Every structure is written in structure tokens, then in C-alpha cells.
Amino acid sequence: MSNRFVIILAAGQGTRMKSKLYKVLHPVCGKAMVEHVVDEMLRIEPDRIYTVVGHGAVQVKERLDGKCEFVFQEEQLGTGHAVLQAKPHLGDKTGMTLVVCGDTPLLRAETVKALMDHHEESGAKATVLTAKLEDPKGYGRIVRNGEGMVEKIVEEKDATEEEKQIREISSGIFCFDNSLLFQALEKVTNDNAQREYYLPDVLSILRKEGHPVSAFLIGDPAEILGVNDRVALAEAQKIMRRRIHEKHMKNGVTIIDPENTYIDCDVEIGRDTVIYPGTVIRGKTKIGEDCEIGPNTEIVNCEVGDATVIKHSLVTDSQVGSSVQIGPFAHIRPETKVDDEVRIGNFVEVKKSFIGKHSKVSHLSYIGDAEVGKDVNIGCGTITVNYNGVKKFKTIIEDEAFIGCNSNLVAPVTIGKGAYVAAGSTITKDVPGNALAIARSRQENKENYVEKLKLKN
Ligand code: UD1
Ligand code: MG
Image 1: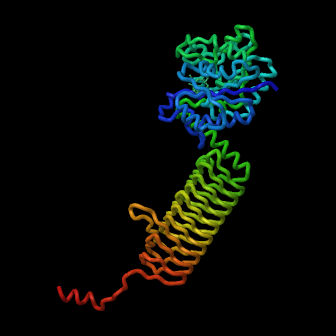
Image 2 (image 1 turned 135 degrees about the vertical axis):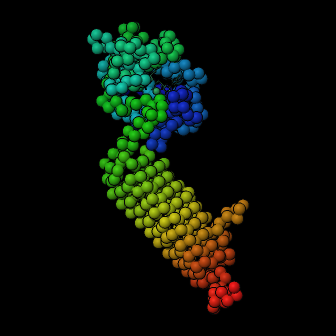
Image 3 (image 1 turned 45 degrees about the vertical axis):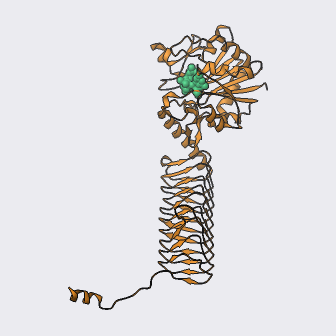
């Protein structure tokens, strides 16, 4: 096998996105568009991958760090000019060079492999991946001659009315003989509507020089969707989502309503877990087997064990054990670790805390900066008073402690093993193990108070 190189074009501003974020960094199901492209290209194991960066170079390089090499395009003078920037690295090499755009996040390695095979088998010096679209608007059109051979690619803005009727479009993805590519690029001019150096012009240049040029028609045109604006971005997300859902369903996950479920591309989910509608699972989340997630739940960057149920809740950057019940309407904030068999009920907020095995925080509580042991029962309305306006303090609740309803635990404070806190207490001092702490004013009943009141008036 000859040398194989990949050039990914990602230097454009992406004006049509109307965004502060550079186009290729817009995420599709949790991953930047250009990262989708690089990851797929890595799967074909080329000798080198060069990403052409320009607008947002620092951010794009940071995102792709370690996955590929970079070349810098100082001025964005067109796709042909962008590829030319790789000449110092590739100009003297022999082999095959694949050029892909950083704004085609749905492209799969399998398709690229098929394109490369076709290119090699046909003996062509340049092959373009094409698709037939119902609505070809915005794409370069494939102009074929009388014998059906590719003659040239004409951009929408340069096309005649007749050419605009052509439904076969260029995906912007090409396979080239490397040496001929760089030779031809030197001959590309910017004599066109956009005053840009077009990469597609390499095809007609090679054709005119008598080199064989070919086209490879893709089966599923959705794969080469070029994201130039937010409408296409939504379209790409929709297609990517369907792929992600199908992968999980084929792996044994039930998704009750795929149309109303949003799962990022790196999420892992175990078998027999059921995902209910309105669920959003983001980032590097890993969910075990036999769980029930949702409805209406968002989980971000979490690890969740097996047989856990999370309903109508938000859980972020936390670890949740097995056989845990969370919700409805719980909020688990970052750096929380919930051990196995814990129950966190409605309207409970937990932040940066550890909740030990088989403990319960069933209703209306705030647990922040706390370490809760196992078999602890935290009554309704318990608040860890963790903040004095300047600093955060820790609450420790040891195993088997029982916190009565509506208690304030003013941190730093420790509730000893097996201790009881009477309902309505405001605890400001440590409570020894097995003790009962009552910290509230004593109830006084004034006999016949109402009668006396009436007599007075
Ligand atoms: C391009 C193709 C068009 C094809 C379509 C497929 C050209 C002239 N047009 O059009 O034939 O149908 O893709 O999606 O090639 N870029 C640079 N430097 C530049 C210009 C662009 O790196 O100077 C990058 C962009 O960041 C982008 C890619 O090249 O990732 C394509 O550029 P874009 O402006 O999206 O071209 P399209 O109008 O979509
Ligand atoms: Mg584009």
C-alpha cells in the first residue's frame, strides 16, 4: 500500500453560522464537527493527518491536540489555497491524498475507504465523492460530458441556470494522486465569482492535462451534509442522534421515544437500561445495566452503576452507585458521590458531598460539602449550613445517625455515629455518638390564653 495522507480543511470563519464560535468547533451531539471528522479519519489509519487551521487556530488546535498535525492558512483565500498550505509537508511525497472538509461531521470512515478503493481500482488521478440531492442548493455541481465523464465542478455562485439544475453535487471530499495535486494547485486561479482559489478546479486542470478523473457516488447522501449554517447544524444533529440511538438500541438499551431523547456520542449505556422520553445524557457519561433513566432527566459527565433509577432530575459531574433512587426533582451537583442503595428524593439538592451506602435523603433537603456515612436517615427539610458568606465548611454525619426534620447543621460540625438530632434543631456543636441533640426553645403551653385575651378587649 502506498503512502496515504489526509488533509482536513478547517480554516474558514464560517460566516453563515453567524456565531462567535468558529464553525468547525460547533458541537454535533457533544463533539466538535471537526473532531468528528478527525476521529473518523484516524479509523482509516493514514500515514499523516494535517488539519488546515486559520480562523480560531488556537482553539481548533487545542481541541484536536494530539490527534493530528496542523498547517496554518493565514488568509482564507479558498479551499485550493488551503490545501496548498500543506505543500511544504507533502509536496515531494508520492502516494494518495484525501482531502475532507471539517464541516462534514457525518462522514464515516467506511465511506472514505470505499472512495479510496474506487480511486485505486479506477486508476484515476483525482476522484470526487458525489451525491445526488433533491435540493442541491449551495453545493458545487458535477458537470459530466457526453460520455458521462466528469468534466468539472462548478460552484453554485458560478453556475449557469442550466448547471444549477444538476442534482449531482460535490461533497468537497476528494482523493488525489499526491504529486499531481500539488502540481495542479499551482495552476488554480481565483477567476470566479468569489475571487477564491477553488480546490474543485484541480479536477478540470488534471482533465485538461489528460489525466483520468473519476467520481464516486455515495449511497446515503446524508453522510456528506456540509454544515454551513444553523439549519444544517440541526439537520446534522438529528441524523447523528439517530445513529447514536440505533447503536444503543442494537446493544440492548430500550429508548422509549428516540425522537425525544438526546444522547451525546461518547455516552456508554449498559444492557436492559430503559431511557424514558425527555432525557438528555451528555458528555462522558457512563450508565450501567438495568437502570431506568427519565423521563425528563439530564445527566452530564456522570458515572452511574447498575439498577439505578433517576427520574425528573439533573445530575452533573458526579458518581452514582448501583440500586440508587434519585428524584423526582432532585439536583445532584458536581463532585458528589452517591454510594449504592441510597435514596435521594424530591426537591433535594446535593453538592460536593459523599452519601454512604443505604442512606436516605428523602425530601426537601440541601446537603452541601458533607460526608454522610451509611444507613443514615436525613429527615425532611434538613439543611447543611455550609457557608458563612466567605468560606465553605464541612458537615460530617456518621453511620446510622438520624437527623430529625427541619434541622440546620451549622458547619463545621460532626454528628456522631448513631446519634439523633431532634426535629427543628439548629446544631452548632458536635454531637457525640448515640446522643440525642435537641437545639430548639422548649415549648410552653399557656392555659386558657384565648379566653383571657377576649376578656381583656
Ligand atoms: C465547498 C466546495 C463545494 C462543495 C461543498 C461541500 C469549494 C470551492 N467548494 O463549498 O464544491 O459542494 O464544500 O460541502 O471548495 N476552508 C479553509 N480555507 C479557506 C476556505 C475554506 O480551510 O480558505 C475550509 C472551511 O473551514 C470548511 C471547508 O474548507 O471546513 C469548506 O469551506 P466552505 O466555505 O464550507 O465551502 P462550501 O461553500 O461549503
Ligand atoms: Mg461547507
